[in-house]
Amino acid sequence: MTAIFVTGTGTDIGKTFVSAALIRHWRAAGRSVDAIKPVVSGFNAAAPAASDPGALLEALGRPLTAAEIDRIAPWRFAAALSPDLAARQEGRVMEFNALIRFCDEAIARKNDFLLIEGVGGVMVPLGGSHTVLDWMKALRLPLLLVTGSYLGTISHTLTALHVLAQRNLDIAAIVVSESESERGGATLGDTVATIGRFANGIEVVGVPRLGSYAQADPAFDRIARAVEIA
Image (cartoon, rainbow, N blue to C red):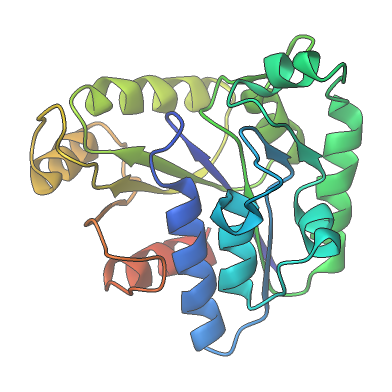
């Protein structure tokens, strides 16, 4: 069984897009795959289809029901803030040990592919003194690091790589998900090439902007192969 943790250099850069595309890739190949996104901020209960759990369930071919959302995303918060702040607004507390148990149980249940999608970026606070980095360290799974092609992304990506290396975490691949060109920045190809010079042999794959979650791209073949051998 392959379990992979999908993390990113920040929020709204394409983690769910990449996760959903990989799910579709493996399902099309006849593989068994599941996904969880245990922690979600900015969740609108009135529009679950527009949420990250909704996108993952659609890719999995699972019904968009309250039970299914609970199954893959038990910690949901309304405010689009870091989980610790969003939880505080609701008078709740993120229980780190419960989060790790939930993930371990999901890993133990599956016999093929499991994607665990994180929340925000590598250093997002979860609660207390714990961050997403601590979550990844506790699970010790190979990582898929998703970044963008926006102006500033190279520095953000190299910073994330440095932090992950300090914790001795393995990165299966780096995915550069092409950003909207609102603030300029280098081309997707130049961004991929520059990050690759500093990636110490980690495969860097560029994914162009696609019209929908369902649209395929050959880049996902490369990403899937990198994950499968991790």
